[in-house]
Image (cartoon, rainbow, N blue to C red; front, side, top):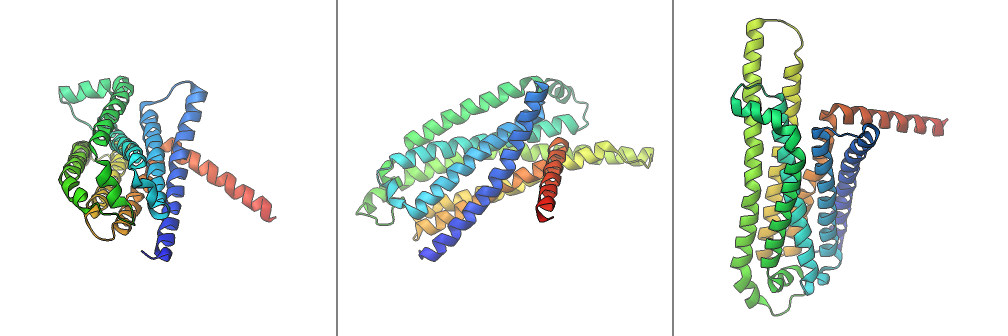
Length: 312
């Protein structure tokens, strides 16, 4: 791959990383400052903070792997460094997906209008179980990461990562089936929380449709806060679903490219697309959350004021 193309891709990756870090750090700082001031944190803020932290770590892992692959590919020759990268990428990836799924479920339980006993019980219990659910997902993600990392073969990992490949073609072919099966199982595991988020979105849509029909029957003609809440929650969930699909496809490209020519270029393009999801979704969450949106407007106003004073 030409050095010029590598340099351009690295610059784009650094730009996406910077944007993603800015948005997620902002979410974490605002919620932590409110937590310190009030000495308590709402469930939605706890989920958003956990999601932001997981995405900061995911962005760092992707960028680290990206720069090592583009600038120092021989670092992966022994496989030990790649094993560490695999562990933290798997961990942060699963945490990211689970936390986003819990956010979708939380929106559904707090905003949707259903009168089924199970729904009402879950709606009543959700605030008290959120901390335990987040800790449980952390423990599960650590377990999955350890299992996946232990079963990935170092010889195959190094032979697909190093540009100056040695005579390890036979070893690579022998380990392809094992590597592919592990990655397929890893991808299938993330489909379950994705399906839960999709179900939450469909139920929110059903709740909005039923509520809209009731509003038409009553014909109040007033602006309904419930509809606005439904629409806001649906925007956050649908944006997660669409961006996650792009991220998932990029992850598949990066995985399958290990068996293709020009491995490094294909992996770098896949990871470049993957960076879009954790980088952009944070700003959608900021715009959809009242406290975060107001905090961002205050920051923008202060920045504008400082710039105006400097120009005077």
